[in-house]
Length: 222
Image 1: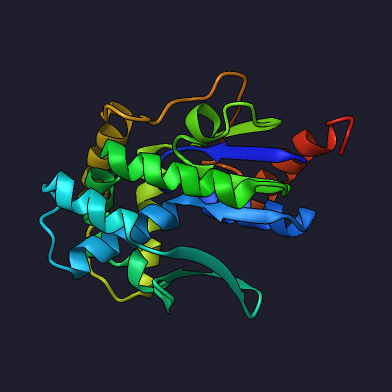
Image 2 (image 1 turned 90 degrees about the vertical axis):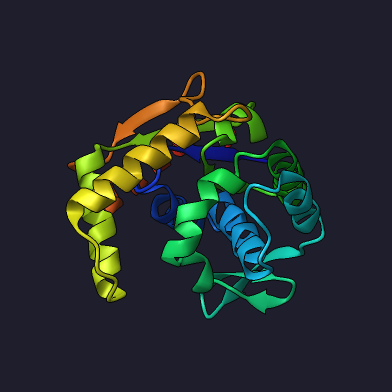
């Protein structure tokens, strides 16, 4: 079994790269960010106070999360409902770092991620994959990128969704999220020991994918 961990800050290209690498290898892709977004959407939908950790953790523990393939695309089901589009809303983005910082939330989802990976070749991406979820991953990758470039990418995404925000507003949003992700008490964003660091600012998605595949193909037992 081969385990590939891909970590990095928001907007560094983790999700797209991991998904394409998994498709190339025909193995399981685990989008942990989507899982944290799904439980954030659930909490907000129920009107739970995002600062009420005890109630929030109970809601998360009673949420059913699954990935399914829909017409060749990965969809995420929350209590059997497809919430793939809903979890990408601005409101979810604003709250996901806080909700994912709680120990009970992370412990529950990490256990679920490990369960998903049992007896499978996997490509898993997030912020604590190579440090906490799969510290013994065969290949560890850390994707990095400047705040400026990540904000530009986010701006294009929002423009396609007809959401109006300025580049400066997005840069500030990303700074705040980076701070929350890297300074939280449990499972903070870190570069995993032994990880290959790839700066994605000036390379294409295809080049990112090829860099990761080269690392994987260098393994003797693949």
